[in-house]
Image (cartoon, rainbow, N blue to C red; front, top):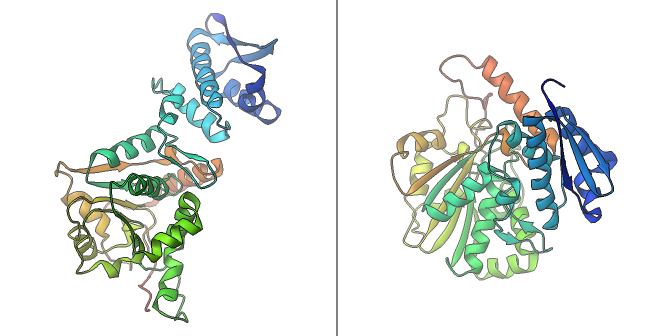
Length: 339
């Protein structure tokens, strides 16, 4: 190892070692490889050998992961990867500080918290601003965190209703005509919203509030002509709106309401030459003070680590192959579904 070698130590309680080190010490091996240090565990003390800068980085992130584990969290590969990214960038924000922001608990008692700096910024913006645009790739928690914030506001009686909506548009394939009544036709498009609510609220609580009209899950077309007061409103998959639809949606907002608009600009399913309402809105509204914009990146992906690699690979490919002028990445002749 280049430079002067130093030896640092930190105590690791026995009860946390298996969680912190990972299966077959996979987390320690990743830290050693990334930061170019040697880690040796003896009698509850972890020795860190390396040059001074890298040894200090390793000690700081290991102690941060330990605090994260002592809160009862399972240390995952995503946690380790993100902590390493913070260490390499010399970012002083600690994973344990981000994790201390508890939004709510799911019906199974699992805590819902931001897991990255981007997610923490997103949650803070939702608390501060009346309207927030959350834009980023798949797996960054845009919809799920917004849903958790909506349920928390509803439980705390900050709003009287939760309204969830998304455009009913197919993901690049024609499904033809669907059987059943109108609700049966639109439900497949809204299923991701139902799934998130079931996980956070539980099916029984969701069904009761749905029957009472306190929770509404509907396609975007149903929003026309309404004024939505004292509501927490989430527009999901906003990249698939037209500029007219986005304007219609944003002008529905009434007093005492909060709005979160989520979308992924790289996954548009609009017709080939159509302009996205999300893109237009972000250009038109960026100077309005009470509207917040949060851009999440591949660093904020909290699904399986492979998803982060897939997102990064597509970003690199699209950057390399997109001609000047920015062609619509939702390629193909895709149209709205007739219902």
